[in-house]
Image (cartoon, rainbow, N blue to C red; front, side, top):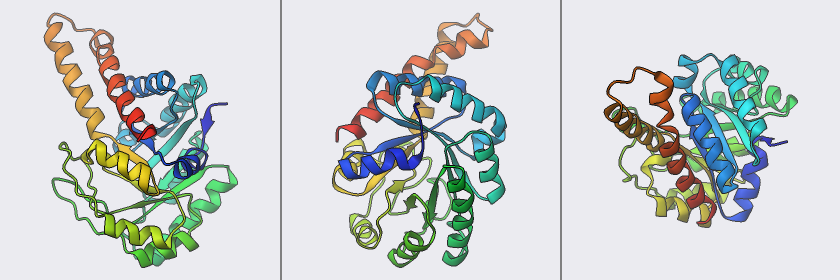
Length: 276
Protein backbone atom coordinates (compact mmCIF):
# COMPACT_ATOMS: atom_id res chain seq x y z
CA UNK A 1 0.00 0.00 0.00
CA UNK A 2 1.53 3.30 -1.11
CA UNK A 3 -1.01 5.59 0.56
CA UNK A 4 0.62 7.31 3.55
CA UNK A 5 -0.02 9.92 6.20
CA UNK A 6 2.01 13.03 6.90
CA UNK A 7 3.41 11.37 10.01
CA UNK A 8 4.56 8.36 7.96
CA UNK A 9 6.82 10.45 5.74
CA UNK A 10 7.84 13.40 7.95
CA UNK A 11 9.18 11.52 10.95
CA UNK A 12 11.74 9.59 8.84
CA UNK A 13 12.65 12.79 7.01
CA UNK A 14 13.18 14.71 10.24
CA UNK A 15 15.34 11.92 11.66
CA UNK A 16 17.21 11.36 8.40
CA UNK A 17 18.23 14.92 7.55
CA UNK A 18 16.13 15.37 4.43
CA UNK A 19 12.74 16.87 3.58
CA UNK A 20 9.56 15.98 1.70
CA UNK A 21 7.89 18.21 -0.89
CA UNK A 22 4.24 19.16 -0.58
CA UNK A 23 3.35 19.71 -4.24
CA UNK A 24 0.34 21.93 -4.94
CA UNK A 25 -2.18 20.28 -7.27
CA UNK A 26 -4.48 22.33 -9.51
CA UNK A 27 -5.60 19.68 -11.97
CA UNK A 28 -5.10 16.24 -13.50
CA UNK A 29 -2.03 17.14 -15.57
CA UNK A 30 0.10 18.37 -12.70
CA UNK A 31 -1.06 15.64 -10.30
CA UNK A 32 -0.17 12.98 -12.87
CA UNK A 33 3.22 14.62 -13.49
CA UNK A 34 4.01 14.66 -9.77
CA UNK A 35 3.25 10.95 -9.43
CA UNK A 36 5.45 10.12 -12.40
CA UNK A 37 8.24 12.21 -10.86
CA UNK A 38 7.89 10.41 -7.55
CA UNK A 39 7.95 6.98 -9.15
CA UNK A 40 10.92 7.78 -11.37
CA UNK A 41 12.97 9.14 -8.47
CA UNK A 42 11.72 6.69 -5.84
CA UNK A 43 10.96 9.60 -3.50
CA UNK A 44 7.72 9.98 -1.47
CA UNK A 45 5.52 13.01 -2.12
CA UNK A 46 2.62 14.91 -0.63
CA UNK A 47 -0.18 15.79 -3.06
CA UNK A 48 -1.83 18.97 -1.79
CA UNK A 49 -5.30 20.35 -2.51
CA UNK A 50 -5.36 23.97 -1.42
CA UNK A 51 -8.29 26.41 -1.28
CA UNK A 52 -8.00 27.38 -4.96
CA UNK A 53 -7.97 23.78 -6.08
CA UNK A 54 -10.93 22.91 -3.86
CA UNK A 55 -12.88 25.92 -5.10
CA UNK A 56 -12.42 24.79 -8.70
CA UNK A 57 -12.91 21.03 -8.19
CA UNK A 58 -15.15 19.48 -5.50
CA UNK A 59 -13.43 17.60 -2.68
CA UNK A 60 -15.20 14.28 -3.46
CA UNK A 61 -13.67 14.34 -6.95
CA UNK A 62 -10.25 15.39 -5.68
CA UNK A 63 -10.30 12.66 -3.06
CA UNK A 64 -10.97 9.98 -5.66
CA UNK A 65 -8.35 11.39 -8.01
CA UNK A 66 -5.67 11.62 -5.32
CA UNK A 67 -6.42 8.14 -4.00
CA UNK A 68 -6.43 6.67 -7.51
CA UNK A 69 -3.00 8.12 -8.23
CA UNK A 70 -1.61 7.13 -4.83
CA UNK A 71 -2.79 3.56 -5.28
CA UNK A 72 -0.86 3.30 -8.56
CA UNK A 73 2.39 4.67 -7.15
CA UNK A 74 5.42 2.67 -6.07
CA UNK A 75 6.36 5.17 -3.36
CA UNK A 76 4.46 6.54 -0.33
CA UNK A 77 2.00 9.27 -1.33
CA UNK A 78 0.20 11.53 1.15
CA UNK A 79 -3.20 12.92 0.09
CA UNK A 80 -3.35 16.26 1.87
CA UNK A 81 -5.87 19.06 2.35
CA UNK A 82 -3.91 22.33 2.59
CA UNK A 83 -5.14 25.45 4.38
CA UNK A 84 -8.52 24.33 5.63
CA UNK A 85 -10.00 26.94 7.95
CA UNK A 86 -12.88 25.05 9.54
CA UNK A 87 -13.54 21.70 11.14
CA UNK A 88 -16.14 21.06 8.45
CA UNK A 89 -13.61 21.42 5.63
CA UNK A 90 -11.33 18.94 7.36
CA UNK A 91 -14.13 16.45 7.96
CA UNK A 92 -15.12 16.63 4.30
CA UNK A 93 -11.55 15.81 3.34
CA UNK A 94 -11.35 12.94 5.81
CA UNK A 95 -14.67 11.54 4.60
CA UNK A 96 -13.44 11.61 1.00
CA UNK A 97 -10.21 9.72 1.36
CA UNK A 98 -7.60 12.31 2.26
CA UNK A 99 -4.92 10.97 4.61
CA UNK A 100 -3.81 14.32 5.99
CA UNK A 101 -5.37 17.72 6.66
CA UNK A 102 -3.97 21.12 7.53
CA UNK A 103 -6.16 23.20 9.80
CA UNK A 104 -5.04 26.82 9.57
CA UNK A 105 -5.92 28.67 12.73
CA UNK A 106 -2.89 30.93 12.46
CA UNK A 107 -4.89 34.17 12.43
CA UNK A 108 -6.68 33.25 15.66
CA UNK A 109 -5.40 33.95 19.17
CA UNK A 110 -3.11 31.08 20.16
CA UNK A 111 -5.61 29.56 22.61
CA UNK A 112 -8.32 29.43 19.95
CA UNK A 113 -5.85 28.09 17.40
CA UNK A 114 -4.88 25.28 19.76
CA UNK A 115 -8.50 24.42 20.56
CA UNK A 116 -9.47 24.37 16.88
CA UNK A 117 -6.50 22.20 15.98
CA UNK A 118 -7.11 19.84 18.90
CA UNK A 119 -10.70 19.32 17.75
CA UNK A 120 -9.52 18.45 14.24
CA UNK A 121 -6.82 16.16 15.68
CA UNK A 122 -9.45 14.28 17.69
CA UNK A 123 -11.52 13.62 14.58
CA UNK A 124 -8.62 13.02 12.23
CA UNK A 125 -6.64 10.64 14.44
CA UNK A 126 -9.78 8.58 14.99
CA UNK A 127 -9.75 8.02 11.22
CA UNK A 128 -5.94 7.45 11.06
CA UNK A 129 -5.48 10.82 9.35
CA UNK A 130 -2.61 13.16 10.21
CA UNK A 131 -2.88 16.88 11.01
CA UNK A 132 -0.71 19.90 10.23
CA UNK A 133 -1.25 23.16 12.10
CA UNK A 134 0.26 26.63 11.85
CA UNK A 135 1.56 29.20 14.32
CA UNK A 136 2.54 32.61 12.99
CA UNK A 137 1.20 33.95 9.70
CA UNK A 138 2.84 33.33 6.33
CA UNK A 139 1.85 36.25 4.13
CA UNK A 140 1.90 36.78 0.37
CA UNK A 141 4.51 38.47 -1.79
CA UNK A 142 1.97 40.94 -3.22
CA UNK A 143 0.13 41.83 -0.06
CA UNK A 144 -1.05 39.84 2.91
CA UNK A 145 0.30 40.37 6.38
CA UNK A 146 3.05 38.12 7.77
CA UNK A 147 3.68 37.56 11.46
CA UNK A 148 6.77 35.71 12.67
CA UNK A 149 6.16 32.63 14.77
CA UNK A 150 6.50 33.23 18.50
CA UNK A 151 8.61 30.51 20.19
CA UNK A 152 6.37 30.73 23.25
CA UNK A 153 3.25 30.15 21.18
CA UNK A 154 4.96 27.39 19.20
CA UNK A 155 5.82 25.67 22.49
CA UNK A 156 2.21 25.80 23.66
CA UNK A 157 0.95 24.54 20.32
CA UNK A 158 3.46 21.71 20.25
CA UNK A 159 2.52 20.62 23.76
CA UNK A 160 -1.24 21.06 23.65
CA UNK A 161 -2.61 20.65 20.12
CA UNK A 162 -1.77 17.02 19.36
CA UNK A 163 -0.82 17.96 15.77
CA UNK A 164 1.64 15.88 13.74
CA UNK A 165 3.45 18.80 12.07
CA UNK A 166 3.83 22.53 12.66
CA UNK A 167 3.98 25.15 9.91
CA UNK A 168 5.94 28.25 10.92
CA UNK A 169 6.67 31.76 9.68
CA UNK A 170 10.37 32.73 9.68
CA UNK A 171 10.61 34.95 6.58
CA UNK A 172 8.97 32.60 4.07
CA UNK A 173 6.10 34.00 1.97
CA UNK A 174 3.51 32.59 -0.41
CA UNK A 175 3.45 33.10 -4.21
CA UNK A 176 7.01 34.33 -4.60
CA UNK A 177 8.12 33.97 -8.23
CA UNK A 178 11.74 34.87 -7.37
CA UNK A 179 14.03 32.82 -5.14
CA UNK A 180 14.82 35.64 -2.75
CA UNK A 181 13.20 34.77 0.57
CA UNK A 182 15.38 35.46 3.59
CA UNK A 183 14.99 32.78 6.24
CA UNK A 184 15.69 33.87 9.81
CA UNK A 185 17.84 31.05 11.20
CA UNK A 186 18.00 32.67 14.63
CA UNK A 187 14.20 32.67 14.87
CA UNK A 188 14.13 29.08 13.62
CA UNK A 189 16.64 28.02 16.26
CA UNK A 190 14.50 29.48 19.03
CA UNK A 191 11.45 27.55 17.74
CA UNK A 192 13.43 24.31 17.45
CA UNK A 193 14.68 24.68 21.00
CA UNK A 194 11.16 24.49 22.47
CA UNK A 195 9.35 22.15 20.06
CA UNK A 196 9.64 18.52 18.96
CA UNK A 197 7.35 18.31 15.92
CA UNK A 198 8.48 18.20 12.28
CA UNK A 199 8.44 21.77 10.97
CA UNK A 200 6.89 22.96 7.71
CA UNK A 201 7.70 25.95 5.52
CA UNK A 202 4.98 27.22 3.21
CA UNK A 203 6.07 29.42 0.31
CA UNK A 204 8.92 27.08 -0.57
CA UNK A 205 9.14 28.35 -4.15
CA UNK A 206 10.67 31.57 -2.89
CA UNK A 207 13.44 29.80 -0.98
CA UNK A 208 16.61 29.20 -3.02
CA UNK A 209 17.36 25.53 -3.61
CA UNK A 210 20.66 25.57 -1.74
CA UNK A 211 18.89 27.12 1.25
CA UNK A 212 16.17 24.47 1.12
CA UNK A 213 18.91 21.86 1.15
CA UNK A 214 20.64 23.43 4.12
CA UNK A 215 17.39 23.64 6.06
CA UNK A 216 16.58 20.00 5.28
CA UNK A 217 20.05 18.85 6.29
CA UNK A 218 20.67 20.96 9.38
CA UNK A 219 17.24 21.68 10.91
CA UNK A 220 13.91 20.04 11.73
CA UNK A 221 12.24 21.58 8.68
CA UNK A 222 10.92 18.40 7.08
CA UNK A 223 8.32 19.65 4.59
CA UNK A 224 8.43 22.40 1.99
CA UNK A 225 5.24 23.47 0.21
CA UNK A 226 5.97 24.11 -3.47
CA UNK A 227 3.35 25.63 -5.76
CA UNK A 228 4.39 28.75 -7.66
CA UNK A 229 7.54 27.14 -9.09
CA UNK A 230 5.42 24.35 -10.57
CA UNK A 231 2.70 26.70 -11.83
CA UNK A 232 5.36 28.67 -13.67
CA UNK A 233 6.58 25.45 -15.31
CA UNK A 234 3.00 24.63 -16.35
CA UNK A 235 2.34 28.13 -17.70
CA UNK A 236 5.53 28.22 -19.75
CA UNK A 237 4.85 24.74 -21.16
CA UNK A 238 1.26 25.63 -22.08
CA UNK A 239 2.37 28.79 -23.87
CA UNK A 240 4.85 26.71 -25.89
CA UNK A 241 2.16 24.15 -26.67
CA UNK A 242 -0.22 26.84 -27.94
CA UNK A 243 2.50 28.49 -30.02
CA UNK A 244 3.61 25.19 -31.56
CA UNK A 245 0.05 24.03 -32.31
CA UNK A 246 -1.77 27.17 -33.50
CA UNK A 247 -4.40 25.19 -35.40
CA UNK A 248 -5.26 22.82 -32.55
CA UNK A 249 -8.43 23.18 -30.53
CA UNK A 250 -7.97 19.86 -28.75
CA UNK A 251 -7.74 20.47 -25.02
CA UNK A 252 -6.18 17.05 -24.38
CA UNK A 253 -3.53 17.52 -27.06
CA UNK A 254 -2.60 20.99 -25.82
CA UNK A 255 -2.52 20.14 -22.12
CA UNK A 256 -0.69 16.84 -22.56
CA UNK A 257 2.36 18.83 -23.64
CA UNK A 258 2.64 20.27 -20.13
CA UNK A 259 3.10 16.94 -18.32
CA UNK A 260 6.76 16.30 -19.18
CA UNK A 261 8.03 19.80 -18.24
CA UNK A 262 6.12 19.73 -14.94
CA UNK A 263 7.46 16.25 -14.22
CA UNK A 264 11.06 17.35 -14.81
CA UNK A 265 10.61 20.37 -12.53
CA UNK A 266 9.06 18.16 -9.85
CA UNK A 267 11.89 15.64 -10.12
CA UNK A 268 14.50 18.33 -9.56
CA UNK A 269 12.59 19.57 -6.49
CA UNK A 270 12.25 16.08 -5.02
CA UNK A 271 15.86 15.07 -5.60
CA UNK A 272 17.28 18.28 -4.15
CA UNK A 273 15.37 17.77 -0.89
CA UNK A 274 16.16 14.06 -0.68
CA UNK A 275 19.90 14.51 -1.17
CA UNK A 276 20.68 17.81 0.54
